[in-house]
Image (cartoon, rainbow, N blue to C red; front, side, top):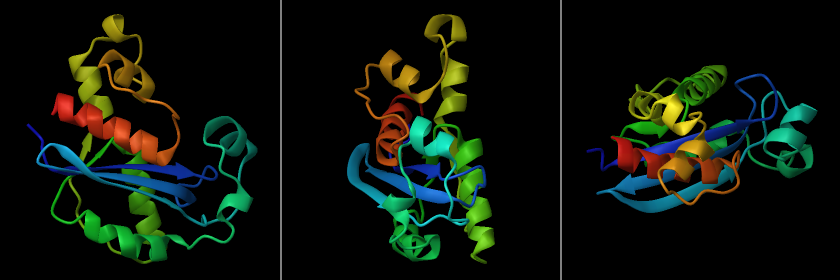
Length: 167
């Protein structure tokens, strides 16, 4: 049973993985959520695709133009991740975003272990039983209260709750 980890979720401003505009972390220790952290980030490149801002997460240029860039945010968040696996719902996206953003800023990859609640849900809950494996669906299926899909902190918390049940 996984009892110590950090759930992570990124939102991006455009189609570039380096365009992080929001990050949510939920730290779990001994099977309990001990900390929730959300930060807005000035994306690189600093432009928004309307589909993202209006249809997905609702964050726009005005929300992040005065926010710190990723290296400043990362210097605060990285210590929260040391020594524990990261968990994401669709780790393929979140791990790619993190790897490419770290590389874009010349920051090394710390070798995080990344686990995926989406992959676990696909393995444990047949599509015929659940319908799909999107984060809100899996939360609903497991009786986890969940609102505000594509809010980085809400998504990280939903992911953490799933991880506590499937790993």
